[in-house]
Length: 176
Image 1 (cartoon, rainbow, N blue to C red):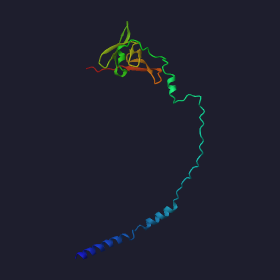
Image 2 (cartoon, helix red, strand yellow):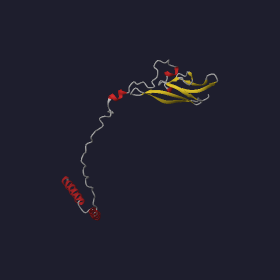
Image 3 (cartoon, helix red, strand yellow):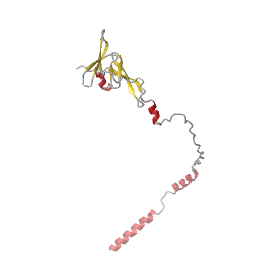
Image 4 (tube, rainbow, N blue to C red):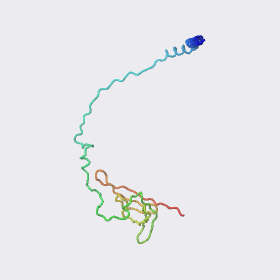
C-alpha cells in the first residue's frame, strides 16, 4: 500500500512537470517581439577624438604669490584708523550690541537728544552722540526717535582696521 501511494505521487509529479513544458499560448506575442526587435536599431555615437594636452606656461613670476604667508604679514599692523587703546572705557562698551535694547529717547534743550539703552541686567543707561557703545569700538553717530546709528571699527585677519555700520532699533514694550 505504501508502494502504491509512492508510485501515485511520482506519476502525478511527472505529469505536472510535463504539462509545464507544453505550449504556453503566447506564440503571437513571441512573433511580435521578434519582428519589433528586428526593426529597432540603436544608435551609439562614436567615441570623440582626444585632443592633445597642451601644458600652460606660468609667466606671472613677478606678481605676488596669493598663497604666500609673507603677503599676509606685509600689511599687518599699519594701524590705519586703529582705535586708541588707552581711552577711558565707558559703561556700554562692556556689552555686545545684540544684548542691548534701545527703550526710548529724551529730548531737552540743554543736552539735546539722549537715547535710553537697556542692558541685559535691565539697567538703563543714557547715551549721546559721540558716546562709545559695544565691544567693537563703536561710536554713536546719530540718534532719532526710533533708532541709534553706530560706527564700529573691526580688525581683519591682516591686522587692518575697517569701519562697519550698525544700529539699535527702538524696542517697544507692552503696557500691563
